Length: 174
Image (cartoon, rainbow, N blue to C red; front, side, top):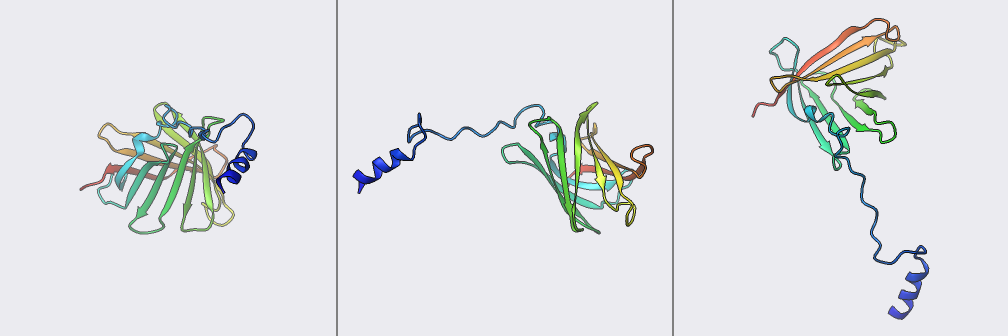
């Protein structure tokens, strides 16, 4: 049986390879671009800016050998969801896909700007049925170890902006 198997194995090899050829290594996701959102990684208690009433918990993890940042948003009331964040290797831009309990998903694109992470995208029906909004989210590391996530919406394609949410992510209490 071995005498038959070895010649067959040699027939199915790509020219110039051997049976011991290893798969190419996975892409490195430890570049400065890939770590630009690391300040958001952690377990958080989430509060509206300027308030002391906690509204959510959020778990943000760097996953898949550092190639993705995954958020689990767990509000005490309302809809939870998950965001998957990654750097596009071609453009170097960050992409976020948000999926919650409502049908559909929202996609944001952006990247680091002046020490902050800024992502924006169109959110269908955010302003009501048929009223889409351009949403800009700015994540800022604060000196006290918290992170601010400031969301703004525009229904006139970015000519004017209004705050739609403003959260402070504080390290989770033990």
